[in-house]
Image (tube, rainbow, N blue to C red; front, side, top):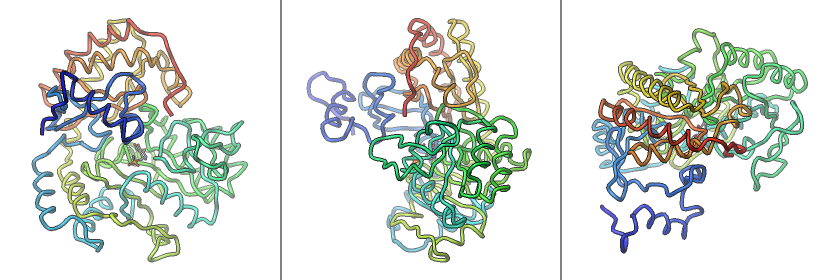
Length: 447
Ligand SMILES: Cc1ncc(COP(=O)(O)O)c(C=O)c1O
């Protein structure tokens, strides 16, 4: 229903003012608030295919895609039909159902996991995985990389300690030091740091968790052989290798990043987390792994884990329908569309004289406004945030909704057709010139 604010205030602005009165920052997840780019977030009324329509009636090509899930675009007719049929049968029972079995079978068929457990968010998936890894190994220490985001789990909202291989400190107020004092935070793509940490603490490390290809400091692909090295190092020390594919799973490729280079490099994770695409736009996520490990979970084993809405029949129906529709052709389309956008963005930025680096992991990519390749979080922080903000707002004014932060992946879908791509391409030159006009400031990252 159209929203009619009083007077001539744009509806998004009026809603944002109302939202800020009742919700911290006016949003339910921080990056939506536009703090990194300034201005007012657009409140979206509806979405179809590659397009968002805001409450003022403006249309935008969507390059957020709900931060990854909408691989098939918005309101895909077959996903909607399956969901509508499911809803008429009731929305949640708290008993086992057929769609959750079928979705689990689909995930097991496509990925290296033998068993899978559903949860409602990526955060829950990584949190449960850490608990399971600790329960399975009987060890306490967890290793993660700076710039990899695994949801807002206390033990993983950690910043590096005073030196390499020293324990972490809380990354945010509200996380007690006791929650991060068993976490080691290392620089990404740095084998020496990993080797040193394992040399010192190897017999205490329960698991190493990494984004299969980081997308949360912008896209920073693992250097060739890095994931295989991590898997082998974990194996050598009796620790579990946890691959977080919440973002990359069924998005970077048909399987995830593992599917892109796993077979080539010969690395297999012990545990994997999934989310986003596998929920088809509903709150669903999962974690899985070797049966021997997964069977330590309750009720089969002693490691407790549960959830009222876990495996919800509507969410699993949406996820199952989405995965079944995610064919090779879908990935080929998204890949081709991404290549076109990457090439055009690079050309526009070069023509405007803006230093930039394009980085990809399968169909996911980021454009860093920086003059050096980004291998790790410290590199990512050199990006020119002020120039990105100008670029972002120019694109928005021209009807393209980019992620409102310089440290995010750009997401496309199989619904990004010629009209959507042409709209993006037409907007890029002016946005690149806007970025050129406001280069200059780099701050300390978003988290
Ligand atoms: C790699 C990764 N892991 C975990 C999460 C947390 O997922 P959620 O936001 O569903 O809790 C995210 C969210 O973006 C993510 O990208």
